Length: 270
Image 1 (cartoon, one colour):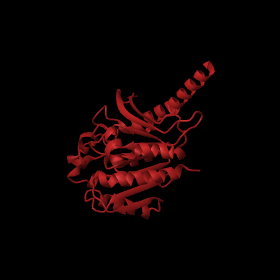
Image 2 (image 1 turned 90 degrees about the horizontal axis):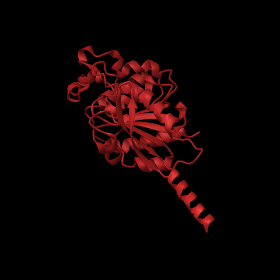
Image 3 (image 1 turned 45 degrees about the vertical axis):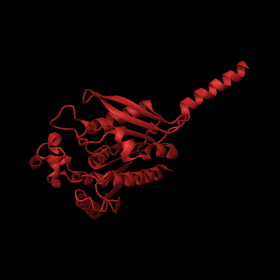
Image 4 (image 1 turned 60 degrees about the vertical axis):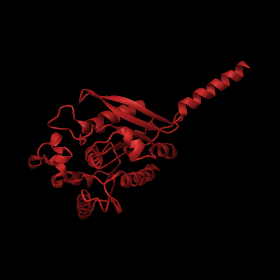
């Protein structure tokens, strides 16, 4: 009887260790001297196994909780099915995932591209190789994913953007409406390093995979995405570009992001 009880206890502990988890953490950023709310979604973790990881950046005014409830509602299921660890940092409503020259505690490029990756590598069973680490986002997060992913091109092997704001200089009224000026400064004096175009030269030799998509009825973002696609094509930089019917809303990006994550999973497969 004692042996039977011991076996049952062991099985119970093993099940708890391997159960899929949605973990809410506050990850400290030394660069910003504050904690950043982050959700980490794991599959059933098996002892001795390591997993690919994807960093997912929400759009303007979003947050990680909304991401799993509304923006990518099948994300938890995909983590289990594809055996991938998803990392969802809070972008502080309107950080634009930049290292802001104006706001001392808005240094999200460094936090996500360096500090958060180091934290996840240390505390979770992820494969520490760019071939098994990706970053994607939508809208503001699409811009952030391209900016961070290409800047840290030795960290991320695949970069995805859905309906991303890929040209801040031509954002028009959106530049102030979505508070880009609060973190990047006036558009007239915008630092060129904040322009996605400035990443093209790096992308040509970064040994990364790139995926872009946008809805054909997305009047804010479609021209930006088409123009960026053309620039990459003119420079003969391999990338996947897709358009499909849709506007700038969660109905569009819920579908497009789920499809991109399926492509990420294929990239991670040997």
